[in-house]
Image 1 (tube, rainbow, N blue to C red):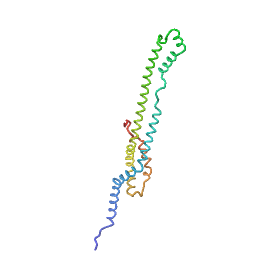
Image 2: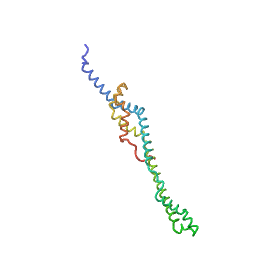
Image 3: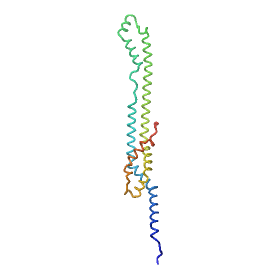
Image 4: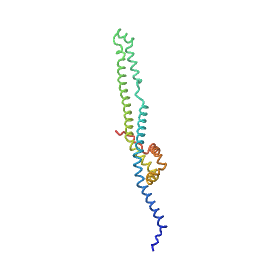
Length: 205
């Protein structure tokens, strides 16, 4: 006689153990592995391109909002008035009558001083503008260069949120694709825009 193997009690337990083992394998190993491969190939390039576009647009907007150096300051207008006074027909007439009265009245000295001060102010304003412009460009370059890292960080968070779905996808050999994976791009964008993976503010260069 054959021994009583009690298959009715052994088979269900075996199936349960096998299912648990396979599920654990899919959840802890094959799911994350497949997720990383799929996300790297199908989702990260689009994310990085979107981040670069946003960075470039943000930099252009900041540059556009940056006030340029004033074309004409109060001192420059005063110097222009002094220059016009010295060259006016009245002053030219006085010169013909009695010499260079503009020097006597100190007009030349006042104009030279105003022009010297104006030149310093203009140079300082232009330098401040160039410094601000350079900082914006450097920060924009930093964000452009960090687009891949930003999206990689967001992808890690998105994969962690959908770990069960990736396990199902990998465990079914991609035959079953949960709805959460169809919206993975939107999830990735949401996490990226949340700021947890933002590029550093400082200049990279």
